[in-house]
Length: 483
Image (cartoon, rainbow, N blue to C red; front, side):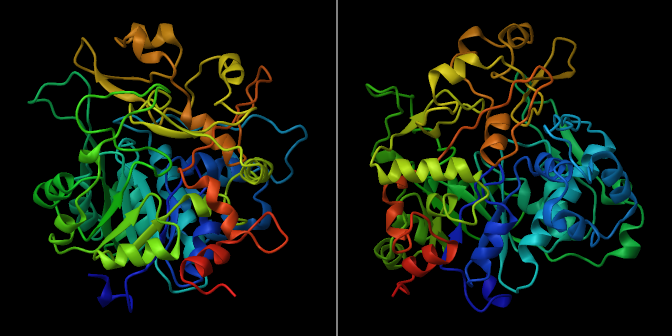
């Protein structure tokens, strides 16, 4: 596999935590230490717009934009979004159009370019591998996201929250700048219905073939929770699967639902059983490299993973709260104080994510996990990454989100039961990264913190005498380099 490009497979893959928690700065810090940094691609076009409207502190976005191979759209983006001297108080962020099956060209351009920027900055100044993490549940921008990351030379593509069988073949075609189509899951559609997002680099950017050489096809690592899913991906994928991230249900973010009927415990959390524990011996026999994720955050766990045949581990929570994390600083410090006070409660919420997947949520006052804060928010869907495409009565495609206003959702054919407990992860996670939208009525979107069950133990990474730690501290601990 990767030995043809890199001397060895990475032992440690930094988790791809969105929105912008795994930003370019964190990914670069990990890669500079010789392991594999990962940028989260989810919603990164929104984050780039926010950074530009904040004045592009440090000039990093504009530096990356200057390296994009097609400069015509760059000037339009800067003219529309860059604010050299932001006003105080900050003005509401401009919102790009929402993604649809037939997106506006300007949105496609913005998505490609923002993913180029994030990967370019993560790879700048070193030769170590960098990955991008995307969600199969966020299908509409996937192809544009992949192409932008590939233009910047991304080395690995990691995807979870679904079964991304189409992606390997798309990577093959995008590496040659060929047109692609991505089949979209549309609720209520019949077997004979076909709904696709189409993407042709030569249409989006003039002069593609003249200005760019064939791109290196990145390695593809889907996130799985069972050998059944691994075998299905190998059999059904449109191209080569290069390995797997095997993730357990104690990992942060979205978790695979329990196998079988959903059952909840007395706290309203999903009950996972033996069937939800992957058989690693069977995964090893598949003959592809794999990394273990979810609770693998100690040197002993790294050894354990390699003893059962894994190439290494993927670690998320430890990096989410390090100095280089993209999490808003005061929020990150509040979480660390909760760890110091031994007052941490992480809940696997079966309802909050509009995807329907269980989602890990840290119980923290003044965030959307606080019932009073949740109840104060007037429902609004103005980003729409988690909107569900559905077949309307006129056979056209509509879009709905169970976190949008209840009457709107029901009018679109959704059920009233489905809206209960849902949260606007798009806005909440942007706020967690320090980019909360301020609505015109003055309301400021509040954060939601997702973390794995390993949060209470991050104190082991603290520098002596400090309540903080760096990405290097995490890596030194995991590879037994601590003094």
